[in-house]
Length: 66
Image (cartoon, rainbow, N blue to C red; front, top):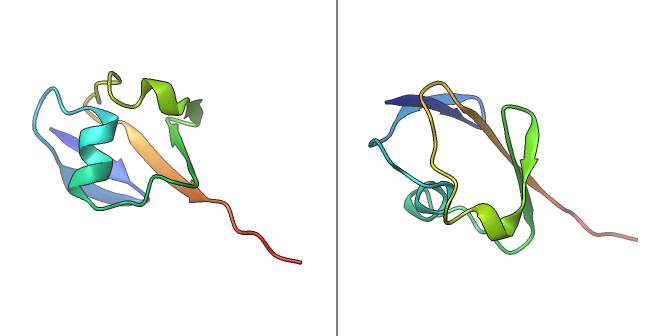
């Protein structure tokens, strides 16, 4: 099954959850927002959100500064 992760096409196994994907690609989950097909997904849903063919996932990191 193919999806896009931050603009890059990748293959994943069927029934992969969003949290599985983030862990597999070692994406730091502490201070990110994840959007799938331009819709923000709440952190509480990551472990149950099953990815679908052609989903587009964008991981956005918050940066602080002053």
